Image (tube, rainbow, N blue to C red; front, side, top):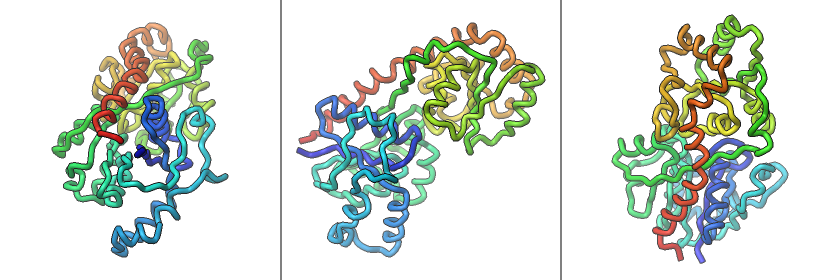
Length: 339
């Protein structure tokens, strides 16, 4: 029986890898045969260097380069994180059968060249990564009849539509520890401090502190998974002025933990299909440093319960993700004639 092989970056604890484990798990629960193909970044760099030497595809396969570089068992430096171990996701055994179906995140789209006789699905999880991927692949290769496309967000769907590429929706889902859902709120504000946030957080925090002297800020960067959950669950507000290349996970986790969110009105956060929240809580780039924004944050802090109630549509949207994902997986993969 052929397998569905989902490619995943090894040793990465971001939303994309977790979505990959979720997909493999859901496929296996739905009576498909699926596995996770863990790839080290250094192996990707090595294979790309060899591609520049213009070796043919048959050269690669005859030399078993894929088996040697990519089909690795889990080792001490390439482990599955504890939070992924509950997923039913066996590791790929290196059997490169033409009948396999390969699932590549958009940043691995260039790898479809290695499987010309197989069906491949490109799963567009991040438009930012997609922009990088576009520089290294002929777009017409993405339009071949054995290449399929799925998007995690409406934002990604619109991006593909602009390239005249048809896609189906294959989202993901968000979960949080049940014991934290009703945690009491302290005088805390969590704020995304990732490297793609272009705003001066010292200025933002200083302006907020003028209005809320007792506030304690938690910058959400480099924290363990448990610390992320505990911080979000204890905070009154989660501020995310990042770039939202898709349906970013942390803002959805905050909502499930009963925390009001304030986001930048860009990309995946801008559409109600991806982030169903009032425009009041979506801040335009030109207004990030405005008194209007800081007064809103002050009001959200003082009246956090009332503001959270106004986010009921987003709560409902995020709570329904798992059921939607299950349906999307079955509906799409059932049509690929897997045998």
